[in-house]
Image (cartoon, rainbow, N blue to C red; front, side, top):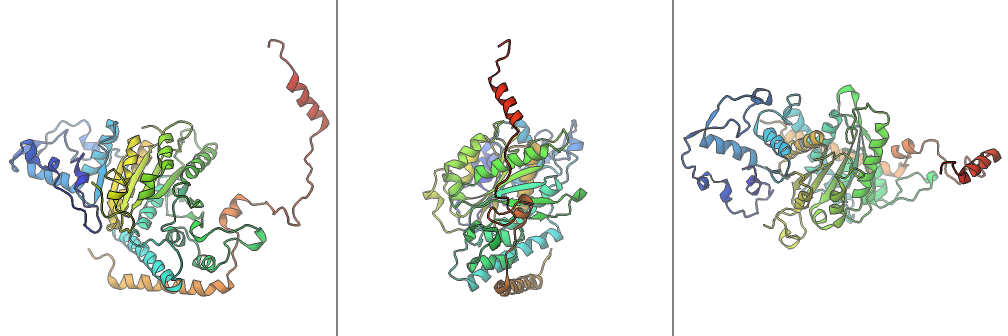
Length: 476
């Protein structure tokens, strides 16, 4: 089940994938034919909390039917897990214990994310607002090339869950790289870009004030760098920086990794001595399935990920897989989360030779979680598992009724209408990124700029440097 369960998991949103019966999942293949016969599962299955199972030799007897049902519920659901290819026994045991038992491998940890009523409301609000935005843009700007998120809306609850987990886990800064698809949805919601700023850009305005003198970029390259508050302990707010998109698929990946590493080393100077690379800054990368499997820069980034001079402390990758027709360690690792969504591009059978678009991640033995994008609650749970792995190893009921959903959609549409009307009087302001990073700087052509600054160095200083540069030590 642990090795082959992913091949039978229900990860296709439209249920169009024809999957043959996986013989390896049938107990009869191994001569186990009596469903009522009991077996001692102690030491074979994780069935107890770690605090009670560690060092325990007590026997626990389960019937074959109970064992099969338990493992199928874990491994043949709407989340498919691939981790048995890892050469690390510690990592394999960590995953099996995490998934099969009632607690985590460390008793200090909280249980796996439980999607309660409050979390479900949050998920539905994000989905509804994303849908309203796409419909609104289609209605008001029908000729706009907007790279909408239709079919992949679960990306927003996934990122929301990741941001929350990271904030509560002590992460201070997230560096993000992503392609065009879903960028506007993410900016206008989780990254708090005012809708008026978005509409102003669509209508030909600039995202920067005129007095700055900057040239603007195209709509699908917009960025934001807000500070988000997820109510974490010690009032730990988290800053999320979405990097500019250079159009060329996956080209932003090394930039995101480099900035993450640089930012982390800057914070290490003011952090406790036990702070390690990846404790304060995390890299998050979003991909499309075709580019992730096809672009060489992805493989290059993975190949460098565990090297001392290149590691960024661990990256979480979210691959939005448009294909609904599938072809059949160290301080740093990559956790891959593949989100199955409805798509319209080339069938996978004509695009790659591997079963999954994420198979390239196995070159560095990274675990892979495949999730049915039509089940946002499972997406949130999978993202929680991905963050826990990254943190641990440092490696690459009616909850909301129809009336409430209608109310959310109507209120968000009214907000968008009001923001669209505000565009005529909207004036872009210097973004928070510019204010924070460039405070005190002035434009070179402005009156405040010093045209002829004093850059000279004292004569005696120059003489001392000159003498030192040609001085030969006595014992040389």
